[in-house]
Amino acid sequence: MNTVWLLTALTTGLVGSLHCVGMCGPLAMALPVGRLPPSQRAFSIGLYHLARLTAYATLGASFGLVGQGLLLMGLQRPLSIGAGLFLLVWTLVARGKFGSITSAKPTRWIVGPMSRFLQQPSWRSFVVLGFLNGLLPCGFVYVALAGAIATGSAANSALYMALFGAGTVPALLLVRSVPSLFPATIRRHFTRLMPVMAVCVGLLLLARGLYQSGTSSDSSQPIPVCHGPLIVGK
Picture (cartoon, one colour):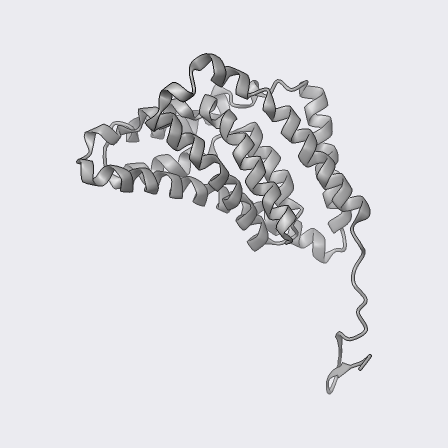
């Protein structure tokens, strides 16, 4: 996975963090940090975000296995094109209104346990809350997963999603420490950036699928034969 694609993951996270402030900011504000001894607060917040990134990486690895299987079948380019078309069509159909993605029904099994752990100021609670938060349905997570699956590797997909998650951390730290930077009126407008980013990633995926070179035919690669590899082109 090249550096440009890694930067795409981080950029998606940075832009998505503005949306996260509106959607996940209230949860970050509700964390029971104040009920912990001062010496444990920074560590607990770190555990929360580390667990959240772990959830993203787990999702990435799962989707990456699918992409890896398609790569072995020679379908990497169609996969990238399909993921790009999905994002573009999805954005057109939704008309940029992705707020309904996080609805009560699909998240009930997550929100219930989260509400209980919010009442338990312990390190275990912060880990569980962070991991469950990473599993919440979110439009920007879907955008990132579309980019991750196109990497064609479980490991690269997990790294892609971890970088996406890392990009969301600064804004979520700021909204808790300096909430005045993100008043409610501004947070509501952050969601408008989602369709813009979805279109950008979709176009990148299309370009990646349409213009990437085919399978390399480097003549210096070893050709396996029954008595060992035969090196040609030397």
